Image (cartoon, rainbow, N blue to C red):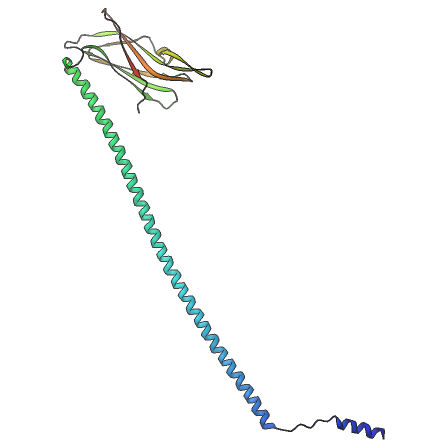
Amino acid sequence: MGNQLSAGSDVARVRVVAHRPVQRALALALFGLVTVIAAVAGFFLGRAVGGLDLSYLRSLEQLEQSNTAQLQKLRDRLVDAELSGQIATQAADALRADIVRYREQAAGFEEEVTFYKSLMAPSSVERGLQIAQFELSPLDEDNRFSYHLLLTQLEARRDWVQGDVRVEVNGRMAAGPGYQEQLLPLTELAEVDAYPLKYRFRYFQDLSGVLELPSGFLPEYVVVTVSRRGTRQDNLQRTFAWLVSG
């Protein structure tokens, strides 16, 4: 009897399902169709999106190329403008330098013409022995200068003249916290074979040499004193400001 109850209990768990093969086939077919449609739609959607991205990327690349070309053109124009400006500036500077040089040359020529006119026509200027010029030019070394002293004789009838020349530089020498005025003869500034300097000429003579200033000395002016032998005339003296040319 116990076995019968057990068998009846197993029968109670059995579930009866209707057998519908047509509906199941339709469901599978519908599921497959939906899957295919989804796959096709995804494919075309992905392709469309990919085409859109590729087109957008190409547009960006073209825009970048255009901007790069335009930027290069602007840079070229800027370089041309800067180069033109530099050339114009250099040309203007060169022109100004030429003008200054020509003016200096013209002034020098004018001085030479005046000087030679005075030699040829002494009646138009003061006659006698003259201290015409004293010029200073810098040398490569500090505190070293070349000097040129020009003596002339302006007479209707020129005889030989001779005598002595003394050159002194007046300035201030550093002394403690301040400066002390000092007059230095040429013998303390230059190496000379004989002093005073000697001259002998009929028309003009140029005396030149190199002088070196001591450290701490500030020159202010140069005193040139000329004496003439064979006469009782007073010494001729002229003062030149310390001006360095060139």
